[in-house]
Length: 352
Ligand SMILES: Cc1ncc(COP(=O)(O)O)c(C=O)c1O
Image (tube, rainbow, N blue to C red; front, side, top):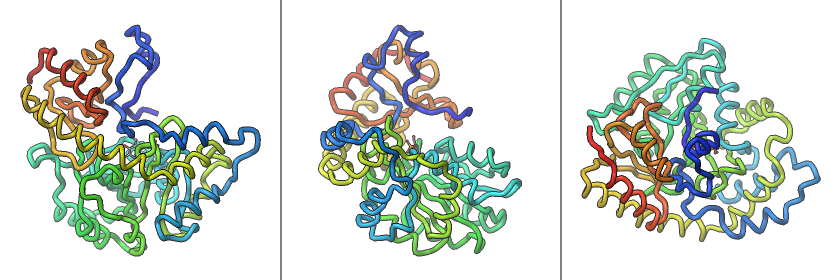
């Protein structure tokens, strides 16, 4: 696997003489409060010795009741990354075309290439504030007629968030056999979030959703795919048995019972985001307005800035692999932690 991701790398930390506990991690976009205490309690109580339910029935039932859809519309995965790969395999034959709205999460590209399919991109340009032109995207879908389209909404790393009308126009432009896969992993932290679930009724939309961001479960691995039952069944057949372990299933159920934890995280994010926008502007670091819990910051040489911050025990995402070498991406953490980041950035010799 060649895909670059945020998060901590132990070998790199060791080279800097750092342990994980020494590092403030702004490079992965997870809940700034970590996992909920109820989830930690469920972890201690999980049955470690029995095989997990292969169908993740209890978690699917819990999710189905919340979302207002049938259990047959849901597949649980070992992180949404597993589901991205399985969905690509379910939808793509070698040499099929897949359109990806870029810059974006790298696993879509990786998954498509592993299927032997062709990647086409619809890039968001810096000149237009890193937003996409929907009319252009519609024309592209109508002419290339991709078998699959990946759209991350809100998008990692830009924070762009398309409205329902834009998604309907993209869905409308597809061939009857085409599928629009919308990754909704950052909806729980979005400003003015809208509910994507009714889009499933269109029949040619599938929703991907990580549960590692809002519930702070990145180390556990959990996500789901919501789609029409035939596609769920086709994708499920590609999944290895017991892919989703018993602890992950139990923690998922416990996390869904604790809405107050995610709500508390949302209010931390709201406060920290405002702080970061203001403080970064005050030290002449331009930011890209984001609808969700992370933002791009234009620092000049992202690779150099990332290394300099890491030496100070702060991890940020260098966006070079997204084609944005002048930007870092920072997740919003607690206010005191954001103050440490701003202080470290203030000390660095920056500028394009
Ligand atoms: C947009 C997006 N989708 C999916 C994932 C993967 O999440 P998971 O931890 O569920 O595999 C990420 C992780 O960064 C992401 O940014």
